[in-house]
Length: 333
Image (cartoon, rainbow, N blue to C red; front, side, top):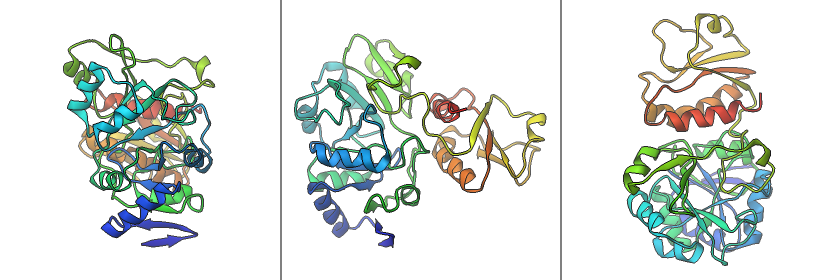
């Protein structure tokens, strides 16, 4: 157990799991590992506990929370199911898929930003599943970072952002996926929409359901209204440095790489090297690139770069999710 200014990082021992489950039952916050990114968890059925999430993160009330469960019986307590949602849950849970469904009265309005829908997923991370089982509660858990900043993929990332604002962090190692879950709107099973891309692709969803699945396009005028699901704001996942996106970094771009500007290739370049040249994966593997994206953005921020020139991902299995995060990170410019 490591301690810094009141914020503790706990190893995943049976004793610590029991201790943190007790903290959650009494309304405290616990940062938890998931296979996607680290989340800041509270009892999803306790509005007062969930309000502490918004306070710790500086999160606006119009951005709802995702509820995490450990068995399907909990879902019926939280949401109204339909055959399409049940099929997706059977195929992809536990895993990085969030379903948006009509909510049950047990879910506090604060959790859903006052909307009649709720976002739910069943995570795969074994340590979080043990904690969910131990506390026997559904847990609301958005990413464990100050609102709008780069999502955390390690326990140390959480402490760097929320040190002193929360007391407990459960260390489950680096996140295996590194990007937030795919969010699917299944409120109307005849019109299924992907609200946020992730590790589960639209092609996988279509193949599972045997019907069309469309990509939701956010409306800029609706950014101040309650969002149907988290991660839909135009600007999000942003480092302090400004990000400029390129389909391909050119020789002219490389001339800008210096102590203030980093160049981030998607794949290790054959010739371009130097102190200020980086890449997401040496071989261009999209799964590994996704896993490294947020950690690299954080590293560049702490290294003092003011500008990041970043290549977008070429077509591939994780391209949609990676480019979605890059576009939102760059939106503040």
